[in-house]
Length: 315
Ligand SMILES: Cc1ncc(COP(=O)(O)O)c(C=O)c1O
View 1 (cartoon, protein in one colour):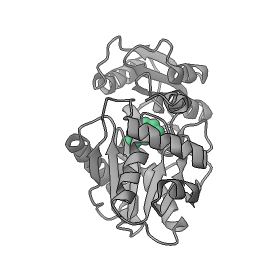
View 2 (cartoon, helix red, strand yellow):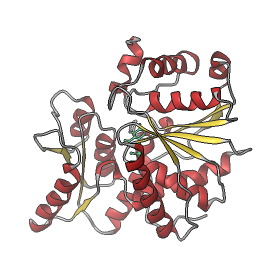
View 3 (tube, rainbow, N blue to C red):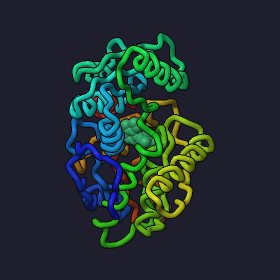
């Protein structure tokens, strides 16, 4: 199907899809398929490249001159947004909670040309309101802002992952029994649900929530998925199953999750971050061990700073 929304191309698509034979042998389970959005080819931005293509497409179509969004010290989206905005010829302003000092992801965003606006506290939820307020201030000063909430998770941003589902449908020889991916702000899984429905696939999806209670994020994903399908004019998507992988806290994996991430590194050269990847990958292995049949793990990327404890072998 064609996606008619304006799109600013950033990614090298399709991202690879392949079997993880060495990992299967090491784990003693399978088949395990990997969809490699970590190799998406735009500034280590991983899965977030996909919504940004449509968000920047809309921003440019509206004649915007500054992209306004936000996040926290460990955000992958902030540097991705900064790089994408600059590539599209826009300025970028980022409202950030927490302490930006010494945060490599935010340093990268600044190096890419973004301006940080620290909130001065650790309230994550307040960021989206402050993003809208900053956009209003910029507009009053004669600028043309395009503002999006944390993670770029809007119905339009989700179109990026709907397109990814159609991309996947074209790559698959056989439908897997299950697709597993990490869930943060929900836009990726929402778009995936909408895109699978659009492609006529009813493959179940297991969302692995790393930051929000499953019931809360499931409702949000469902709303975003419905909004995305409405934009595309495609059938109503099914709801994903969402499990709780918050574990020891946001950005910290359990010992087992880290061990499995190290195994993925040793056997396949697969770099999983401790915020999203290690948790979601481990959930995929749980499913294989439970005998669910062929599992597709959607590797969403994640920046290097969050992989360090896995590299050191810290447990
Ligand atoms: C590496 C990685 N994986 C998964 C996600 C979750 O995506 P979403 O916020 O669309 O749920 C993020 C979000 O920033 C991410 O950076």
